[in-house]
Image 1 (cartoon, helix red, strand yellow):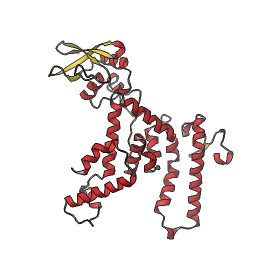
Image 2: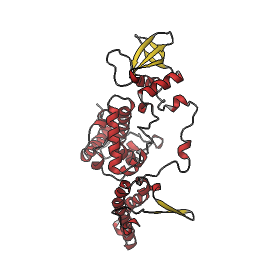
Image 3: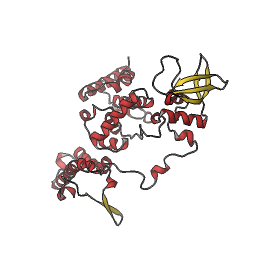
Image 4: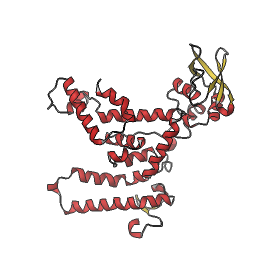
Length: 337
């Protein structure tokens, strides 16, 4: 079997030690070189560079496992069958452990974590992989507006109000049906086909008796792009406008410290020993001191209720903004500066 599909199948549920993953990547490259009857000394760039530049553009193991891990997390969060609840606990643990606001903030944080630091949490690991290959994922898996997050009764009532049709298999025949009524506190719904046939279907979980999908599953299969309740109630709404308005988007701590960390990382990676001088040494020490001060203050600020950068004191000066550390127990004036 080719290692690519095998890795995509098993990767998301296996905790790979970094050393072993590097061995896997080396074996992956060797297999491709042998398949293309290339010399072992052939540059790996022939496999990874774009096709429009005359190369093969093969997905390397890190990109394969990145795609597979995000797909795995999406499926875990999709249906209310137990895995969603476990995924939500895992996601909240990741945010709390690293003091992050949301998925975007976690990706900024995960970029500077080591492989071993991210390996025990699926969401942190996924965010680390996206950062490693230079992309960002915009996703709020447990948004209360998501269909998967909706209470059974609320979802069923919206389906009744909107008369939204779902496509499903009924007695070996594909039919369109709509929700007529709610039973057992939303755990069951009464359905009716276009021909007037009625039947009972579960709202969530797994139905192992009737063979019907649940209401959540049927909606997802009928309309894969339908993820928000508001897409049913407000079909003409354009998303993203509210989020882009000034003052709507909060700035997480990981995003706030990102420029400093990026400068520090670049300074460490790109400067050669022979070009090192006192000026660069001073800059490096200043950046390190700034990061250390931030790491010491951040938990105390979060504990005091300052969960985002824009929640602390700030003064507009000319074209810039100066932020001030609030008076928090355990933070002295020197660290606050």
